[in-house]
Image (tube, rainbow, N blue to C red; front, top):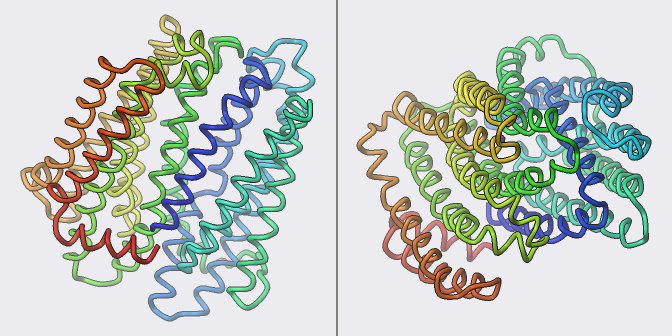
Length: 488
């Protein structure tokens, strides 16, 4: 888990550091196209048909039972689905590019040719990334987090560096996409070789009907849940993109990128916790799972809370120094709302992993679909009047309402935790986050500017970390964290 967290933190920091350079280097309109391609790729990623989570779930169970034949056929069947889905998604993005550029999105006519090229190169990136997701799921199920986290850190860094280098060399939108396509293809090939090595045999993607019939019910529910998740996160910005021109999108898309980077941090715990729950599902004793769930939620709040509090308090200062004061005025409301949304998405992670790991992905589907519907409905009302702020409010409010329901329902139904016990468990971390956020706000009134924000953030966070470790964490949680630090 420490390695996953380190890789995620590094990639988040790198993305935050390079984004303003890419935004200013491409210009607002071209960066808007860059965001549109990413958005469409995110929606098409659901063509893996839920076999990402299903692959981890069934591979972990097969390994726990010592069934090597089940391992083999699961990888073969999942590979066939991923390959077919990747080819279909790439074909749709490539062939649909003219319509997206000329009719669906509002793109300046002078930029339409470059946008068309970007969407078509994006099709290749999508295919490579799609297959990389399969290999990552296999490594996750095998417990090879060293290779999983290392490859993500290396190729994530390479992708960011390639984009910056392309702009520094005088290239535009096309050059950035060519550079990232090169990195995406390299990542897929390397991970394919790594998985082949650990399986000690070549992968032969083919339809295994018996395995597909077994995996299909789980995968279909996960697939629909994945679509709902994409609409939950990307539905409001899609409504926004359909109502405003490309130049207005960065005021939302840059804070939305921050949200996505924060969700990368969230996945550090899920990468390890989901396989743990899947392995626990073959036993009858849920006591360890109950304790792990409570600690996971508590640590999630303690870790993500100060990050979100700092962004909410210092959003104008950070955006002004990061991009420009003019951009800050337009994007600050969006960053504040989406930072809060990121916190609740983080809190939704542990109960989602419990439901999936216990073979009940339908509960995650209920969460994501309710949030997606609510978010799209609110954004359709709010975006015409409030633009980017309306989209951010729609995403934040829908995620908040749905997350609270999910946490309470999973805790009570699957783990036997009463609402009173759950509230008592989470009360300490929530209070600690509220206090450190108040400290940030107090510091903001004393020290203005970026230096003041950094000094306040450093001092308040150090005090928060010490108090949280000794006063909020339970003894077993302190011991577990100390072991993680020693192992790291």
